[in-house]
Length: 417
Image 1 (cartoon, rainbow, N blue to C red):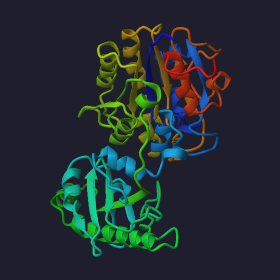
Image 2: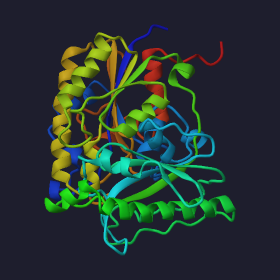
Image 3: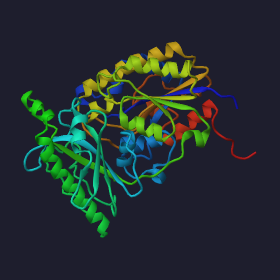
Protein backbone atom coordinates (compact mmCIF):
# COMPACT_ATOMS: atom_id res chain seq x y z
CA UNK A 1 0.00 0.00 0.00
CA UNK A 2 1.40 3.40 -0.94
CA UNK A 3 2.50 5.70 1.88
CA UNK A 4 1.22 9.22 2.40
CA UNK A 5 1.55 11.74 5.22
CA UNK A 6 -0.77 12.98 7.92
CA UNK A 7 -1.12 15.93 10.27
CA UNK A 8 -3.08 15.64 13.51
CA UNK A 9 -4.09 18.98 15.04
CA UNK A 10 -5.15 18.61 18.68
CA UNK A 11 -7.15 21.48 20.16
CA UNK A 12 -6.96 20.53 23.82
CA UNK A 13 -10.39 20.59 25.51
CA UNK A 14 -12.08 21.84 22.30
CA UNK A 15 -15.51 20.30 22.87
CA UNK A 16 -18.08 22.46 24.65
CA UNK A 17 -21.77 22.92 25.34
CA UNK A 18 -24.23 25.66 24.29
CA UNK A 19 -23.24 28.79 26.20
CA UNK A 20 -25.51 31.73 27.07
CA UNK A 21 -22.67 34.22 26.59
CA UNK A 22 -22.43 33.05 22.98
CA UNK A 23 -26.13 33.14 22.20
CA UNK A 24 -26.65 29.47 22.92
CA UNK A 25 -23.82 28.34 20.66
CA UNK A 26 -20.61 26.59 21.58
CA UNK A 27 -17.28 28.44 21.19
CA UNK A 28 -16.52 26.38 18.06
CA UNK A 29 -19.95 27.06 16.54
CA UNK A 30 -19.65 30.80 17.17
CA UNK A 31 -16.03 31.22 16.05
CA UNK A 32 -14.92 32.34 12.59
CA UNK A 33 -13.53 29.12 11.12
CA UNK A 34 -13.39 29.31 7.30
CA UNK A 35 -10.51 26.83 7.13
CA UNK A 36 -12.09 24.24 9.41
CA UNK A 37 -15.34 24.72 7.49
CA UNK A 38 -13.45 23.98 4.28
CA UNK A 39 -11.93 20.83 5.74
CA UNK A 40 -15.33 19.75 7.07
CA UNK A 41 -16.76 20.07 3.55
CA UNK A 42 -13.86 18.02 2.15
CA UNK A 43 -13.95 15.11 4.57
CA UNK A 44 -15.55 13.13 7.39
CA UNK A 45 -16.87 14.70 10.59
CA UNK A 46 -18.43 13.72 13.88
CA UNK A 47 -18.45 13.96 17.66
CA UNK A 48 -16.10 11.24 18.86
CA UNK A 49 -15.16 9.98 22.33
CA UNK A 50 -11.75 9.50 23.97
CA UNK A 51 -12.85 6.09 25.31
CA UNK A 52 -16.66 5.85 25.37
CA UNK A 53 -19.67 8.17 25.76
CA UNK A 54 -19.86 9.75 29.18
CA UNK A 55 -16.37 8.69 30.24
CA UNK A 56 -14.34 11.66 31.46
CA UNK A 57 -10.59 11.49 30.85
CA UNK A 58 -7.56 13.56 31.71
CA UNK A 59 -5.17 15.10 29.25
CA UNK A 60 -2.80 12.18 29.74
CA UNK A 61 -5.32 9.42 29.03
CA UNK A 62 -6.88 11.46 26.23
CA UNK A 63 -3.57 11.75 24.40
CA UNK A 64 -2.63 8.13 24.96
CA UNK A 65 -5.92 7.19 23.30
CA UNK A 66 -5.34 9.70 20.46
CA UNK A 67 -1.93 8.10 19.88
CA UNK A 68 -3.52 4.68 19.48
CA UNK A 69 -2.90 3.16 22.92
CA UNK A 70 -5.29 1.37 25.26
CA UNK A 71 -4.79 3.40 28.42
CA UNK A 72 -6.33 0.60 30.50
CA UNK A 73 -3.32 -1.55 29.65
CA UNK A 74 -0.46 0.95 29.95
CA UNK A 75 -1.65 3.79 32.17
CA UNK A 76 -0.45 3.74 35.77
CA UNK A 77 -1.24 7.33 36.74
CA UNK A 78 -0.46 10.84 35.55
CA UNK A 79 2.54 11.18 37.84
CA UNK A 80 4.98 9.01 35.86
CA UNK A 81 4.04 10.78 32.61
CA UNK A 82 4.75 14.15 34.23
CA UNK A 83 8.05 12.89 35.62
CA UNK A 84 9.08 11.64 32.20
CA UNK A 85 8.01 14.96 30.67
CA UNK A 86 10.29 16.75 33.13
CA UNK A 87 13.25 14.56 32.15
CA UNK A 88 13.28 12.71 35.48
CA UNK A 89 14.43 9.08 35.51
CA UNK A 90 12.28 6.88 37.71
CA UNK A 91 13.66 3.76 39.34
CA UNK A 92 11.62 0.61 40.02
CA UNK A 93 9.52 1.22 43.13
CA UNK A 94 9.51 5.03 42.81
CA UNK A 95 6.15 6.79 43.08
CA UNK A 96 5.50 9.90 40.99
CA UNK A 97 2.86 12.61 41.28
CA UNK A 98 1.71 15.44 39.07
CA UNK A 99 1.54 18.71 40.95
CA UNK A 100 0.67 22.36 40.81
CA UNK A 101 2.42 25.27 42.43
CA UNK A 102 -0.49 26.73 44.39
CA UNK A 103 -1.36 29.45 46.86
CA UNK A 104 -2.62 28.36 50.28
CA UNK A 105 -3.10 30.11 53.63
CA UNK A 106 -1.81 29.10 57.05
CA UNK A 107 -4.55 26.51 57.63
CA UNK A 108 -3.84 24.95 54.20
CA UNK A 109 -6.95 26.36 52.53
CA UNK A 110 -6.45 26.69 48.77
CA UNK A 111 -6.65 30.31 47.62
CA UNK A 112 -5.49 29.74 44.04
CA UNK A 113 -4.64 26.24 42.86
CA UNK A 114 -2.35 27.55 40.08
CA UNK A 115 -0.64 30.41 41.96
CA UNK A 116 -1.95 32.91 39.43
CA UNK A 117 -0.69 30.67 36.60
CA UNK A 118 2.87 31.42 37.64
CA UNK A 119 5.49 31.29 34.89
CA UNK A 120 8.66 32.88 36.21
CA UNK A 121 10.75 31.52 39.03
CA UNK A 122 9.35 27.99 39.03
CA UNK A 123 12.77 26.41 38.39
CA UNK A 124 14.17 28.16 41.47
CA UNK A 125 11.19 27.11 43.56
CA UNK A 126 11.46 23.48 42.43
CA UNK A 127 15.20 23.41 43.04
CA UNK A 128 14.69 24.56 46.65
CA UNK A 129 12.72 21.36 47.28
CA UNK A 130 14.59 18.95 45.03
CA UNK A 131 16.62 16.40 46.99
CA UNK A 132 14.67 16.77 50.24
CA UNK A 133 15.27 13.80 52.57
CA UNK A 134 12.25 12.80 54.63
CA UNK A 135 12.33 11.40 58.16
CA UNK A 136 12.35 7.76 57.03
CA UNK A 137 15.12 8.36 54.49
CA UNK A 138 12.88 8.68 51.41
CA UNK A 139 14.28 11.17 48.89
CA UNK A 140 12.03 13.63 47.08
CA UNK A 141 12.79 14.75 43.54
CA UNK A 142 11.04 17.89 42.24
CA UNK A 143 11.17 19.38 38.76
CA UNK A 144 9.19 22.24 37.19
CA UNK A 145 7.07 21.74 34.07
CA UNK A 146 5.02 24.20 31.97
CA UNK A 147 3.81 27.27 33.91
CA UNK A 148 2.41 26.22 37.33
CA UNK A 149 2.86 22.50 36.75
CA UNK A 150 5.47 20.43 38.55
CA UNK A 151 6.50 16.78 38.87
CA UNK A 152 7.26 15.12 42.21
CA UNK A 153 8.90 11.71 42.69
CA UNK A 154 9.33 9.81 45.97
CA UNK A 155 12.45 7.64 45.79
CA UNK A 156 12.98 4.98 48.41
CA UNK A 157 12.04 1.51 49.59
CA UNK A 158 8.62 0.17 50.48
CA UNK A 159 6.52 2.80 48.67
CA UNK A 160 3.10 2.46 47.03
CA UNK A 161 0.91 4.42 44.61
CA UNK A 162 -2.25 3.33 46.46
CA UNK A 163 -2.70 6.68 48.23
CA UNK A 164 -5.00 9.65 48.06
CA UNK A 165 -3.29 12.93 47.19
CA UNK A 166 -3.51 16.47 48.52
CA UNK A 167 -5.40 18.21 45.69
CA UNK A 168 -9.00 18.99 46.75
CA UNK A 169 -10.04 19.17 43.08
CA UNK A 170 -10.51 21.46 40.10
CA UNK A 171 -12.20 24.79 40.92
CA UNK A 172 -12.03 23.85 44.63
CA UNK A 173 -10.60 27.12 45.87
CA UNK A 174 -11.77 27.61 49.45
CA UNK A 175 -11.28 23.94 50.32
CA UNK A 176 -8.44 22.70 52.47
CA UNK A 177 -5.70 20.42 51.21
CA UNK A 178 -6.56 16.75 51.56
CA UNK A 179 -4.47 14.89 54.11
CA UNK A 180 -3.14 11.83 52.22
CA UNK A 181 -4.34 8.41 53.29
CA UNK A 182 -3.73 4.81 52.26
CA UNK A 183 -6.12 3.20 49.78
CA UNK A 184 -5.33 -0.27 51.04
CA UNK A 185 -4.15 -1.76 54.32
CA UNK A 186 -0.52 -2.18 53.34
CA UNK A 187 2.26 -0.62 55.35
CA UNK A 188 3.81 0.69 52.12
CA UNK A 189 0.68 2.71 51.33
CA UNK A 190 0.53 4.12 54.85
CA UNK A 191 4.21 5.04 54.65
CA UNK A 192 3.78 6.76 51.29
CA UNK A 193 0.78 8.76 52.56
CA UNK A 194 2.81 9.91 55.57
CA UNK A 195 5.73 10.83 53.31
CA UNK A 196 3.55 12.86 50.98
CA UNK A 197 2.06 14.84 53.86
CA UNK A 198 5.50 15.46 55.38
CA UNK A 199 6.71 16.74 52.02
CA UNK A 200 3.64 18.98 51.70
CA UNK A 201 4.16 20.55 55.12
CA UNK A 202 7.88 21.05 54.77
CA UNK A 203 7.47 22.46 51.27
CA UNK A 204 5.03 25.06 52.56
CA UNK A 205 7.57 26.28 55.12
CA UNK A 206 10.38 26.43 52.56
CA UNK A 207 8.39 28.04 49.75
CA UNK A 208 6.75 30.64 52.00
CA UNK A 209 10.19 32.15 52.74
CA UNK A 210 11.60 31.75 49.25
CA UNK A 211 12.95 34.93 47.56
CA UNK A 212 10.80 34.29 44.48
CA UNK A 213 7.66 34.40 46.62
CA UNK A 214 8.81 37.40 48.64
CA UNK A 215 9.19 39.26 45.34
CA UNK A 216 5.76 38.05 44.18
CA UNK A 217 4.21 39.25 47.43
CA UNK A 218 5.78 42.69 46.96
CA UNK A 219 4.31 42.82 43.44
CA UNK A 220 0.84 41.82 44.65
CA UNK A 221 1.00 38.42 42.95
CA UNK A 222 -0.15 35.09 44.33
CA UNK A 223 2.57 33.34 46.30
CA UNK A 224 3.51 29.89 45.00
CA UNK A 225 3.87 28.63 48.56
CA UNK A 226 2.66 25.05 48.16
CA UNK A 227 2.64 22.05 45.85
CA UNK A 228 -0.67 20.25 45.59
CA UNK A 229 -0.43 16.72 44.22
CA UNK A 230 -2.54 14.16 42.40
CA UNK A 231 -2.14 11.28 39.93
CA UNK A 232 0.09 8.92 41.93
CA UNK A 233 1.62 6.19 39.80
CA UNK A 234 4.44 3.73 39.29
CA UNK A 235 6.54 3.55 36.15
CA UNK A 236 5.21 1.40 33.32
CA UNK A 237 6.91 1.01 29.94
CA UNK A 238 5.01 1.13 26.64
CA UNK A 239 5.85 0.16 23.04
CA UNK A 240 6.58 2.98 20.60
CA UNK A 241 4.60 3.83 17.47
CA UNK A 242 7.71 2.94 15.48
CA UNK A 243 7.65 -0.53 17.01
CA UNK A 244 3.91 -0.97 16.48
CA UNK A 245 3.42 0.59 13.03
CA UNK A 246 6.83 1.40 11.60
CA UNK A 247 5.88 5.08 11.46
CA UNK A 248 8.19 8.08 11.85
CA UNK A 249 6.25 10.60 13.92
CA UNK A 250 6.82 14.02 15.48
CA UNK A 251 4.99 16.26 17.93
CA UNK A 252 4.94 20.08 18.04
CA UNK A 253 3.74 21.38 21.41
CA UNK A 254 4.33 23.96 24.10
CA UNK A 255 2.97 21.79 26.89
CA UNK A 256 5.70 19.64 28.44
CA UNK A 257 3.24 16.98 29.54
CA UNK A 258 2.01 16.41 26.00
CA UNK A 259 5.60 16.46 24.77
CA UNK A 260 6.55 13.84 27.33
CA UNK A 261 3.69 11.56 26.33
CA UNK A 262 4.71 11.97 22.69
CA UNK A 263 8.28 10.98 23.51
CA UNK A 264 7.08 7.95 25.44
CA UNK A 265 5.18 7.00 22.27
CA UNK A 266 8.44 7.23 20.32
CA UNK A 267 7.78 10.56 18.62
CA UNK A 268 10.40 13.26 18.17
CA UNK A 269 9.31 16.24 20.30
CA UNK A 270 9.80 19.78 19.00
CA UNK A 271 9.14 22.90 21.03
CA UNK A 272 10.22 26.53 21.37
CA UNK A 273 10.21 29.17 24.08
CA UNK A 274 7.45 30.95 22.17
CA UNK A 275 5.23 27.86 22.40
CA UNK A 276 3.93 28.82 25.83
CA UNK A 277 1.06 26.39 26.29
CA UNK A 278 -1.20 29.39 26.94
CA UNK A 279 -3.15 32.08 25.11
CA UNK A 280 -0.02 33.87 23.89
CA UNK A 281 1.49 30.80 22.26
CA UNK A 282 3.10 31.30 18.87
CA UNK A 283 0.56 29.61 16.59
CA UNK A 284 2.25 30.80 13.42
CA UNK A 285 5.52 29.31 14.64
CA UNK A 286 3.82 26.01 15.40
CA UNK A 287 2.25 25.91 11.95
CA UNK A 288 5.52 26.73 10.18
CA UNK A 289 7.41 24.10 12.18
CA UNK A 290 4.73 21.52 11.38
CA UNK A 291 5.13 22.35 7.69
CA UNK A 292 8.92 21.97 7.88
CA UNK A 293 8.58 18.57 9.50
CA UNK A 294 6.19 17.45 6.77
CA UNK A 295 7.65 19.13 3.69
CA UNK A 296 11.38 19.22 4.46
CA UNK A 297 12.04 16.48 7.01
CA UNK A 298 9.46 14.07 5.56
CA UNK A 299 7.91 12.80 8.76
CA UNK A 300 5.04 10.40 8.16
CA UNK A 301 2.79 11.83 10.86
CA UNK A 302 3.04 15.13 12.72
CA UNK A 303 0.96 16.12 15.74
CA UNK A 304 0.43 19.84 16.42
CA UNK A 305 -0.96 20.53 19.89
CA UNK A 306 -2.61 23.71 21.23
CA UNK A 307 -3.40 23.98 24.96
CA UNK A 308 -5.20 27.32 25.32
CA UNK A 309 -8.67 26.06 24.37
CA UNK A 310 -8.55 23.83 27.45
CA UNK A 311 -7.42 26.69 29.68
CA UNK A 312 -10.37 28.82 28.56
CA UNK A 313 -12.74 25.99 29.42
CA UNK A 314 -11.29 25.53 32.90
CA UNK A 315 -11.43 29.27 33.56
CA UNK A 316 -15.00 29.64 32.17
CA UNK A 317 -14.16 32.30 29.59
CA UNK A 318 -16.14 31.27 26.49
CA UNK A 319 -15.36 34.43 24.52
CA UNK A 320 -11.62 33.78 24.93
CA UNK A 321 -12.13 30.18 23.83
CA UNK A 322 -14.07 31.34 20.77
CA UNK A 323 -11.34 33.85 19.90
CA UNK A 324 -8.59 31.27 20.37
CA UNK A 325 -10.38 28.86 18.03
CA UNK A 326 -10.46 31.62 15.41
CA UNK A 327 -6.72 32.18 15.78
CA UNK A 328 -6.06 28.46 15.46
CA UNK A 329 -8.18 28.40 12.33
CA UNK A 330 -5.92 31.08 10.83
CA UNK A 331 -2.88 28.90 11.59
CA UNK A 332 -4.64 25.96 9.95
CA UNK A 333 -5.11 28.14 6.88
CA UNK A 334 -1.36 28.70 6.74
CA UNK A 335 -0.83 24.94 6.75
CA UNK A 336 -3.44 24.41 4.05
CA UNK A 337 -1.67 26.84 1.72
CA UNK A 338 1.59 24.89 1.95
CA UNK A 339 0.51 21.24 1.69
CA UNK A 340 -1.17 19.09 -0.92
CA UNK A 341 -4.28 17.50 0.57
CA UNK A 342 -4.01 14.77 -2.06
CA UNK A 343 -0.86 13.47 -0.38
CA UNK A 344 -1.21 14.74 3.20
CA UNK A 345 -4.38 14.24 5.24
CA UNK A 346 -5.39 16.60 8.04
CA UNK A 347 -7.22 15.49 11.16
CA UNK A 348 -8.58 17.95 13.73
CA UNK A 349 -9.80 16.70 17.09
CA UNK A 350 -9.28 17.02 20.86
CA UNK A 351 -8.21 14.88 23.78
CA UNK A 352 -11.48 15.59 25.61
CA UNK A 353 -14.19 18.22 26.03
CA UNK A 354 -13.82 21.05 28.57
CA UNK A 355 -17.11 23.00 28.56
CA UNK A 356 -16.73 26.48 29.99
CA UNK A 357 -19.65 26.33 32.41
CA UNK A 358 -18.53 22.91 33.68
CA UNK A 359 -14.96 24.21 34.20
CA UNK A 360 -13.70 20.65 33.95
CA UNK A 361 -13.38 17.73 31.56
CA UNK A 362 -16.65 16.03 30.68
CA UNK A 363 -17.74 12.90 28.83
CA UNK A 364 -19.18 14.87 25.90
CA UNK A 365 -18.23 14.01 22.34
CA UNK A 366 -15.22 15.74 20.79
CA UNK A 367 -15.59 17.61 17.45
CA UNK A 368 -13.49 15.75 14.87
CA UNK A 369 -12.62 16.18 11.17
CA UNK A 370 -10.59 13.93 8.87
CA UNK A 371 -10.01 15.43 5.42
CA UNK A 372 -7.83 15.07 2.37
CA UNK A 373 -7.52 13.53 -1.05
CA UNK A 374 -9.63 10.42 -1.35
CA UNK A 375 -11.04 10.52 2.18
CA UNK A 376 -14.77 9.88 2.17
CA UNK A 377 -17.06 12.88 2.52
CA UNK A 378 -20.28 13.24 4.43
CA UNK A 379 -22.92 15.98 4.27
CA UNK A 380 -21.33 18.32 6.85
CA UNK A 381 -20.11 21.65 5.45
CA UNK A 382 -19.18 23.67 8.57
CA UNK A 383 -17.46 23.09 11.90
CA UNK A 384 -19.42 22.74 15.14
CA UNK A 385 -20.71 20.23 17.64
CA UNK A 386 -24.32 20.45 16.42
CA UNK A 387 -23.33 20.37 12.75
CA UNK A 388 -21.22 17.27 13.34
CA UNK A 389 -24.24 15.35 14.60
CA UNK A 390 -24.92 14.65 10.91
CA UNK A 391 -21.41 13.37 10.25
CA UNK A 392 -20.22 9.84 9.62
CA UNK A 393 -17.65 9.74 12.46
CA UNK A 394 -20.21 10.07 15.25
CA UNK A 395 -19.71 7.81 18.27
CA UNK A 396 -16.30 6.55 17.20
CA UNK A 397 -13.45 6.60 19.71
CA UNK A 398 -10.03 8.24 19.74
CA UNK A 399 -8.48 4.85 18.96
CA UNK A 400 -10.80 4.56 15.95
CA UNK A 401 -9.71 7.99 14.70
CA UNK A 402 -6.06 7.01 15.12
CA UNK A 403 -6.53 3.81 13.14
CA UNK A 404 -8.40 5.61 10.36
CA UNK A 405 -5.42 7.98 10.05
CA UNK A 406 -2.94 5.10 9.99
CA UNK A 407 -4.98 3.37 7.29
CA UNK A 408 -5.27 6.49 5.14
CA UNK A 409 -1.53 7.13 5.20
CA UNK A 410 -0.71 3.45 4.64
CA UNK A 411 0.65 2.16 7.95
CA UNK A 412 -1.80 -0.61 8.85
CA UNK A 413 -1.53 -4.32 8.16
CA UNK A 414 -4.23 -6.29 6.40
CA UNK A 415 -5.98 -8.88 8.56
CA UNK A 416 -6.18 -12.20 6.71
CA UNK A 417 -5.01 -13.01 3.21
